[in-house]
Length: 494
Image 1 (cartoon, rainbow, N blue to C red):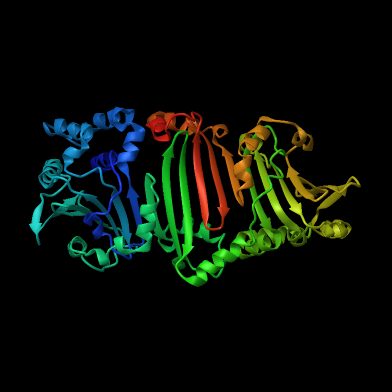
Image 2: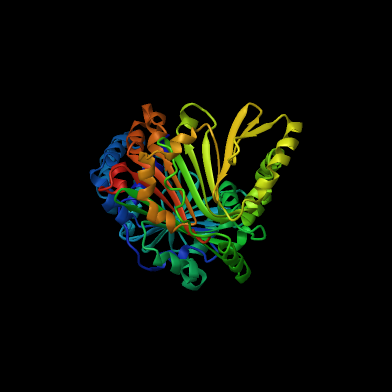
């Protein structure tokens, strides 16, 4: 508990002040770092009004858990004035990964003696060792597992994430502290791109360095021949009035990989906003995209789970033929009933370039009987499919394919608050190849954050929606919107 508390204390002190200029403290980051994050904490502190926030009050109150005696007064003084710890918090802080073995953190030193005093305070609480001079650097350990080294310009913190042998952490710290600019991340194209992105937090990563769950989710949308190690990712977070905005851009390390990404863009298209007005009043999730059906079918077949689903659907209808006919807008809505009543419920639409598959419907009706399924129609291209106790309605109106379950079709023609909501995002939707809206205010998030997490629950209740949008295969934007559109996102959370 003490270790966690002091680590939280140090990190929160860092999230209090920063800007963006190249100085040599950044040279400790190696050129081949697999992940680098830059935190402009000065901007964030000003936006959140951290010094006057409830988080600062909670932090001061919690210090008694990790600091005792007369040092408690000094620790609280550090909360009021983080610059007193000796770091230049007007400069950005950097976190980085070296392969998958080492994690690092660096900051600009403003006052070497003040840094020493801060570490000695931690030492009195048995949280750090005293700084010892080695090779003209002051060195020691923090929380037993973190190795620190600093001089009059640079503070470096290192941790070994994976036990794989390799360079001893003390030796690695010495090498990094003496590294030249030419051998550092500062000399790379990725660093230049990070400096161009004037956001609150910016980070660079090779896709192979991300957790498998994240990397594999991104790879599902990329050409199968692309390798994780050949994709670079640059992301940023900006805290604005009424929203936190996360932007991510990907590019290929090789010309071949970049060409594959450009080819992917040819199979995606901007949406018309064709189905914005066809939503229920209880919309929970809405997803739209512009796509060529033949490419979508290919991507689904490359995914093992999707491929199995296609095989199961083929027992009832020729789903491949239907998907190949898709050309343009596709939209899926999930209503609130799915969450509240645990019912299967959705409605989906797709723009078609032809309706040739309708010629085979009678054949489908006959063959599906072998699997215990049946399908009726009303003579106007509207069908009701019964399968394993579930009912699915689908049909064709003009050039539009629709399918739904758990929804009354009559509700789709009514003007609703959801219609108006999506129409407010109409401009963004029509600029996008992909647009996802999740109404978080209907998901009961505040109920998940009661009791000990009451402070977090208060912050979560201010969140209204999650939006994910993309205008090309090379970029995506995620927005967390709050109900109050006039106050900065961070200030609302803190």
